[in-house]
Length: 98
Image 1 (cartoon, rainbow, N blue to C red):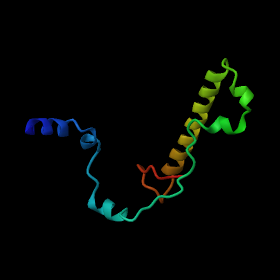
Image 2 (spheres, helix red, strand yellow):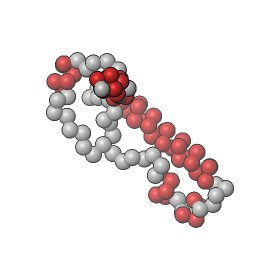
Image 3 (cartoon, rainbow, N blue to C red):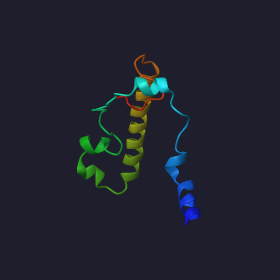
Image 4 (cartoon, rainbow, N blue to C red):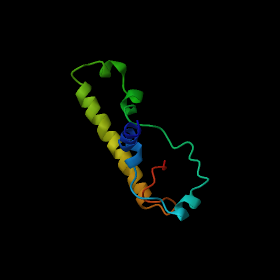
């Protein structure tokens, strides 16, 4: 019984899901952070808003629209990365940026 519990706890993926321990100063600095309204989730929804359903109904053009949408999403993510790189108000590894 004990070996089964130990085996299940050893294979728990959340146990190994960390880079390094966060310093106490960083924990104290971000203790009261509540990030609300972090923006719109663009992935998979960009072209659907401004293209016609008739264009998206063509099965021949679906791969093209998927590639185009992934390219647009990639550009948006890179703009967020550039914004984070030159920002003095955000840490470099944060995901909480609009």
